[in-house]
Image (cartoon, rainbow, N blue to C red; front, top):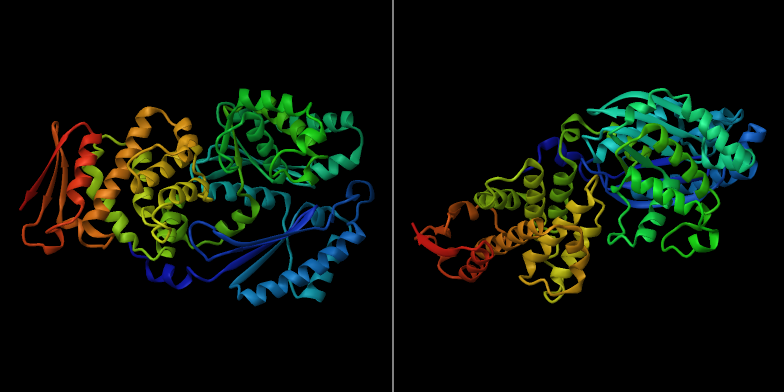
Length: 496
């Protein structure tokens, strides 16, 4: 569907968020104010502002100078990129340090940037908003683990209930004392939150770099087929078992894991200890890792209301369709045209099929010999917000079948391994339907609606207007035959 005037006016103005944390200072630039935050630039500097905060109560002097130099650079980058807006957020280290206000003043004087120092409650809610940005129906506890604090928020039906900010950041715990003391502190602070048992039977959403590192270790240890962190989901039993195993892995073994930030190795055992206690007390059904947190929550909080209500997956698919030089209207029209083939689909299945229709031409510029594999891999790995891994695999496979009719390539084995046969058959139908639609219209809006596709008990019928020259010839009979054969039916073409 076409955008409204407001969306068109604001969509392509990039915005930025600077996150001043206990360990790092990070700038993320998003491509524009749209429903799904698409990062186009991400830079992190390790400044360790919160080092020795627990023992001295002040910011690390060396870290202050590094942070100031970094913020001068980020301000210049933001100006060069022509950002519409830059939000600068200070979290636990700046909030808790006795000289935090002095640091805020120095930043303003030397860079012109105004830091919004978030309270614990504000930081917790930003993290929860980041999860809701990608998973609007999230139900459970958001747990954001940083260097200086652990933020916990109970989320139900898009609303916040209980929340807590605990001094259990990994840097803070690492500096405090021995591992035994850390375990006591973790137990004491978490056990005080009497609302955490209300998470039973729901989900824990793990946010933050320490737990992203833990997710990488789990994926490697499980030999999991999809190396995508967002929405990587474990049952509680799986998570408890893996935490127990990981706790006994040495730094040498952990250091061999692909993509694992070596700076996380020393604090990973603390992250495991915190997670184990949350799982023990909360008794959730699932553990869901999210790559979206406070920065995306800041982005989502400031979205216009007409964008917040949009579905994140469909919005992202529409934007990718536009960026590929295609019109999203054609995807919506194709979705409606194919609907007779899917009379009993659920709302969730329909949404994924619509996403496939919108994404069907995003790889049109790739070399024809590699187009199917490139479409598959791109969709499999794209940062779609909140997309479950099985759904991601099915969507990628549908795009593969949009370009190829066979499944002989080893490239797609990882997707097949994640899906049952019924689902593979369904996405194969989607892909073959997209091939047929493209053969009829070339992706041009306004044409597919002149034809009609129907499925009966014995055949699949395609009705075409007799006097429309665009349908006088083409490859569509062959593609209709393949689609009907896949569905176990004959085919026929009618001229009306």
